[in-house]
Structures are given as C-alpha cells and as structure tokens.
Image 1 (tube, rainbow, N blue to C red):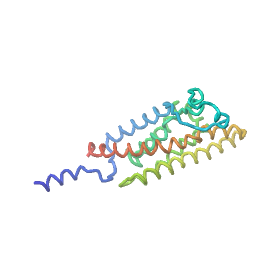
Image 2: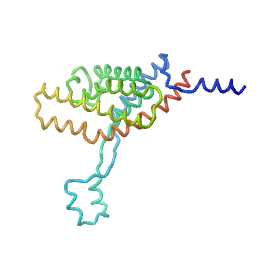
Image 3: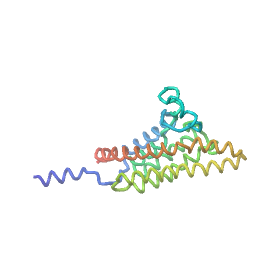
Image 4: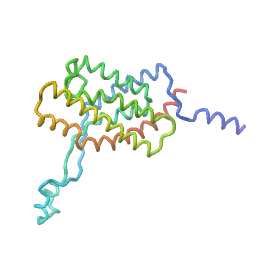
Length: 225
C-alpha cells in the first residue's frame, strides 16, 4: 500500500519535464503577452544611496539633516519588462517563452503597445533592438533552465541573459544612429538612459523573476498533468 501511494505521489513530482502544447498553455501564452504589455507601461520608483560628484563639500555639514541626507538618495524610475520576460521563460520554457515574445513583437508592429508607440516604423526606433534581443536571451535562458535549477545557475542566467539584451540593444541603437547620422552625444545619452544603472536592477530582478517562475512552473505542471 505504501509503495503504491509513493508511486502516485512521485508521478505528480516535477522533474523538469517540458510543458505540453494544450489549449491551456496557449491561453497562458496569451496571458504572458499581456503581462509583457503591462510591464512595458509600469513604472516602479526605486530609491538607493549614491555618492554625487560634490560629496566632499558635504563632509563638514550635518549629515543627519534630512535635506542633506536626501542629496545622497537617488530615485530611479524602473520598468520591469526584462524581469517579466525572464519570469515567462522560467515559467513556460524556451519554446513558449519565444512564442510569447514573438507574439508581443508582431502585435507591437500593428498596435501601439511598445514603450514609445508601435507600428512598422518602430523598427527604426533606438529602443527596438532591446525588444528583438529578448529572443536570443530567452533561447539562452530557456536552454540553461532545462532540468534542475540551483541558485548559482539562476544568477549566471540572469547576468548573461541581461547582458545579451543590453549588448544587442546598444549595437542596434548604434546601427540606427548611423542610418540617421545622429550626433554621438545623443546616442550616448540614449545608451546611458537605457543601459546605465538599469543593468544592475535588471540582473537583480531577473534573478528574482527566474526563481518565482520556476516555483510557479512546478505548480503549473501539476495542474496540467
């Protein structure tokens, strides 16, 4: 009796099996596309300490003063689109993760669901390369996420995956800037705004997204057995 119960319990244990193509997974893929869209227009205000260039001029002042202390706190408007993409690939796997992003891109070429609008002409926007870079990043992450996933692997995936997105995004941005004959100071400001401190936040929240996605995947696999 105990062996039979153990066998039944083991049959519902997640062992890294791929999610099957069903109506439920297709609906879930559509929901993930919607999730990317929502993340695109979501801004989270993050605050962190930093040292401004005029830090030395404050050493002789009362650092307990709230106004002076506020000078060392920086607010950052963060858009969690990249972590959501990694959450999706951790949840659905490489195949359905790529399908979700492809669906998002196709919709964006017809409807204004990208950060700065949409349409065919959006392919010539500076930020479009970051969106295209989701695809190789998902392929990389989905390949490494097959089977057992430990903390170190999650960290490696988040670091390399995020760097893939930003590197390809910057290269695409330089390509568009060359076509437009844009001045380098404009290009530099775009790179700083898109791939500055954003990279650090993307790595941290992408690792968190991967972890949450894997936990949700275990539950999803059991439900869809």
